[in-house]
Image 1: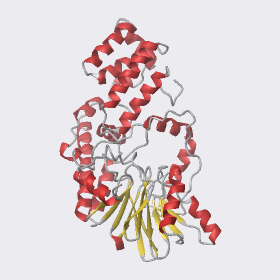
Image 2: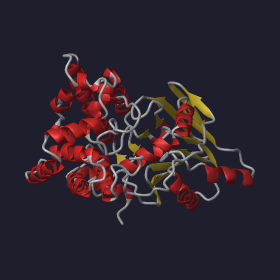
Image 3: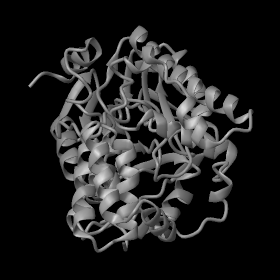
Length: 428
């Protein structure tokens, strides 16, 4: 197995791709010292441990499924060093669950309990998760195509001990940790700069992919502020960057390029969307008019392997324009089932619609085929032929998606129709 540095080099130079080493799906489940006193661990997200000379500080602490393995890897590396502190870059569950074993250890050893640092918005978001357990279980089943009815969302969270608003600094041993807030993927995002090591931990503000700034089922994201934060990071001269997902990047020039290019992509999308909105046009027009800069999407660290660039367009619209899409018939709509039955009747009945879906599929127009087959299943939810064709059409379209998020949601629809349902995570 290549080292982390070797894999990073191969990704940067295009010898391997982020489809093969997906920033979320790929994991090492092992720790590796990538620089003096820096242990990198890649589970679903990255979790990084810094030896300060007087104990350890963790920059993100992994998902619950990584908790035991991460603790074991840290202890192999530094058996007797207490964990002094941890920084949560944001509230997402793949970054926040690794502190527990170290707290239990501290109690057993008589050490001081590790302090958790994070933005003041963390607590509100943890509370939001608790209020929406069923919703978060459903949307994550779709996003990751989890065909597991027993899947539950996490109910217990480790709240931070020390919070801040815009920026703060703490020291541990020989090192200082500068925490700065930027709204981006979340409203509580923290990125960390360790000047003595020229080490930058941007959290999910950089993930070796099109930024997760559009996610169709999740709360608001902030492209413009995100880009400004990336520009600020790029000016620091970092020599090591530890992304929230994906592999580290080494070298000041590469780090600055990755951050500036990501900022340029976000800026371009937001500027185009706002310019179109200022003409008073509809969301449908905006979605199909925005042009994504090809020279950026070709970068090895900006492929659309997780979020789809088109999803970012919708999130910019939502930030500046709300939920109304500009189509007056959608303002106070009839139930979709009623609409579907009317369109199926006007089209000559279910059989004719399904025949047309087959024609569209054969012609390669899966986008339109999805619309028609969806109406067919909504109008006739007990129709086995409609569900069978729906499963085929969505599975075929899923195979064409570079974005794992789009691919999984489409595959979720296909899995549902295979069981005679429109959705496995909801009640229909």
